[in-house]
Image 1 (spheres, rainbow, N blue to C red):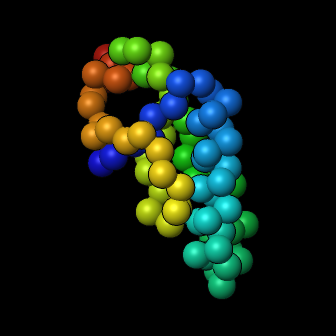
Image 2 (tube, rainbow, N blue to C red):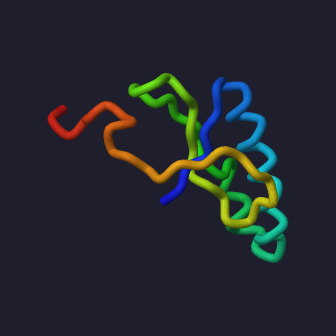
Length: 80
């Protein structure tokens, strides 16, 4: 899975909002889905380099730096 990569949370939030608008166009004939869905993805900060990332939206025409997901990006919460 590829993730979009951003230097700041603000950049990630703005890009995600754009991607969400593209998602809504794809699902415009499904009001139930749109009623339940409020965002494309929630940007998260990587622990490895403090960059902000979220999963690439397949409906977006925006181009961002992308990287293949790496499990080391996020804190391991499996032992909590």
